[in-house]
Every structure is written in C-alpha cells, then in structure tokens.
Amino acid sequence: MINDSTGRLTNKLKQIYVVPFPSVVGNYGDGSFTRPYSSLQQALDHIEQGYYYETTINLYPTHHFVGSIQLKEIHSHIRIKTMDIKDTLAYKQLLSIHDSSHRILSRAVISGGIPITGWTQVNETTYSTSVPSLNFVNQLFINDQRIARTRVPTNYSDYLHYAALINDTTMARYGFQS
Image (cartoon, rainbow, N blue to C red; front, side, top):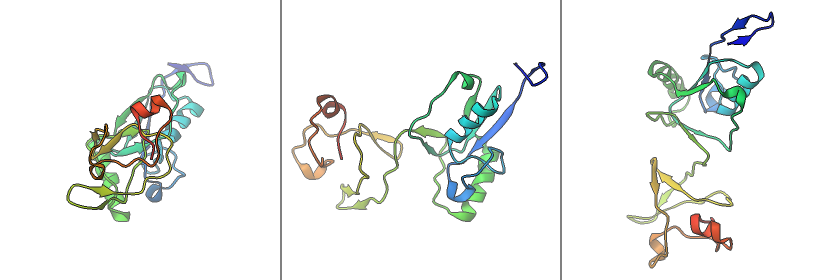
C-alpha cells in the first residue's frame, strides 16, 4: 500500500508490456498492450518515475539483451514474467506481418550478452563469423546451450581462434578475447 496525493492508502496495480523489437513496435511506447516498451530498462524507468506498487512487467518470450540493469528499492514490489500465451499470440501475429525473423522461445530470457549472427559453414563441423569488437567474453551459447570453451587445442582448425593472447591471468583463465 502507498499514499496517493490525498494521503489515502492505495494499491496501484499495473501491467507493463515489453516487446524487444523497436523496428516493429517503435521506441516510443508507453508500456501498454497496444504500445509496449521495446526494452526492460524502459519499463523499470517507468516504474521508478511513477512508483507503481505491485507492477507486473510482461516480457515477450524471446531474448531480451541488456547491457546492465539496476534494480532499486522502488522496484521491490514488481514482478517480471513471461507474458501469457494469449498476449504472446497477439504480438506474434503482429510481428509476422512485419518480419518473420523474430525468434519466439518458451520463456523470456534476460541476457547481458550480445547476439552473434552471420555464421557461415566452413566445413562439416566448423562455422565462422566476425565478432564485434569485445573486451572480454567468458561464455558462448548456441541454441540456448552453453558451449565449452577450448582448453589447449592440438588441432587449431577445430577450435575458437584467439585474435590475441590475454595478458591478464584472471581473464585468461575464465574467458577469451576476440
């Protein structure tokens, strides 16, 4: 319960929707079902500005890539969940009209990673792509499965190639540099 402008205790319930495809839904949503936000951060900022108690953030069931998010005390009564199937189907129909490349998952996934695309097959077991400039990478996922990184390769054609050696021993132990 919170005090409204008249000093009475109120219980504001709010549903916020996030569909992370700004090219389809735009960057200027208001969090409503018809104009969803395109990022989780927009939804968190909305809650922080209006202080909505017991808010539910409904995430479209796909990858939500975020650099970082900061949850504060004001966010302590929010619920972040994958949106209901009926809402998902409504958005899926809208998305398929514009572009069918938007991947749907069984649940929403919040990730601090970046998608790496443009893979080309080199041979039967090897694929290649150019990775954007990154400082430090410690995990690689393919189709939502974590792939073990190389140890000391004996056949360099079968492993991830390092662009440079990592001088920092901590980074060298847990990651790789592209």
